Every structure is written in C-alpha cells, then in structure tokens.
Amino acid sequence: MSRRPDPNAKKEKKIFIFKARTLVGVLIATAVVILTGVFFYQDGLKDKSRHADWIENESTISRLTSDKAYVDHTVDGFTYRYCQLNSYSTSYYLDKKIMIKYNPNDPYTVMTADTDSIFFNIGIAALAIGSALPFIYAGGAGLLELYKKKTGKINNDPNKEPPRETYTNNQ
Image (cartoon, rainbow, N blue to C red; front, side):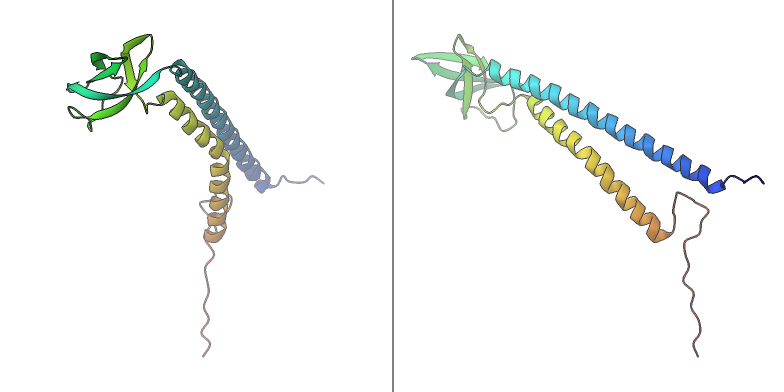
C-alpha cells in the first residue's frame, strides 16, 4: 500500500523557503548597512582628528557670493581678510559674527566651528538603521501574521475565503 504525498506539504515547503530567503536578504542588508556605517563613522573620526589642533576664533563675514562666504578674523594682532569658509548658509549676512576654526600653521585656512564631518553623521545614521533592521523585519512579520489570522488569509492562499459569520433567526 503506497501513501500519497500530502499536497499541503509542498505548499508549506515553498512558504518556508520564501521566509528563509527573506530572512537571509534582511541579514545581508543589515550587514551591508552596518559595514557602510562603520566605514563612514571611521572616516568621520579621521576627519575630526585632522582638525583637532585647529584654534577656535570669532570672525566677521566680510563677503558673500551666491554659494561662498568669506570671513575676516584676527590672530595675534594681524587681520586675515577674505578667508573662504568651508560651508555656506542662507542665514549668513554681511558683518555677521560667527565662530570659526583656523589652521594655526595657515590662518587663511578656516572652517565653521560647528562643522562635523558629514561622513561621521552618515556613519551614525547607518549604524542606527542597520541595528534596527532585524527588529523592524521581526515586528513587520509578526504584524503580518496577525493580519493573516484575523482576515483568514493564512499561508498566502489567495483562494481561501475569510470566515463568514452566520446569523440565525431566533424568533
């Protein structure tokens, strides 16, 4: 006597393979995002350490173009004029006082004092997102299963009708 294979076993195997592929995809995406975050974070730290010996000073915006700002600042009694900033903001106006950092070896080289490396910020964001991805996937999968149970669409079977309530006339 031979046994017939269970038709539902094949369907369950396909669903398991789909879920396993999805999980592997999420884990690969998580690894890529975290590694990218580590790379950018380290590059941002290098950039911060590169400017660690720069000196903070107050300066005055002396010239503005459509995309560049220039400042004047004084070091040891000598005024350095029209030093180009590393960034531009629409909040800048002539004679505005701002804090800068300048290179002690070359005071004409300046940057805004509050400038963090963009790579540092991207790195922190990527690390946060990468760390959260598995939890987002797990929560989404759990909510999807709850939805399927509530609507009656279990195991991704589009042909299965949701359960209907029956009413009886109790007169």
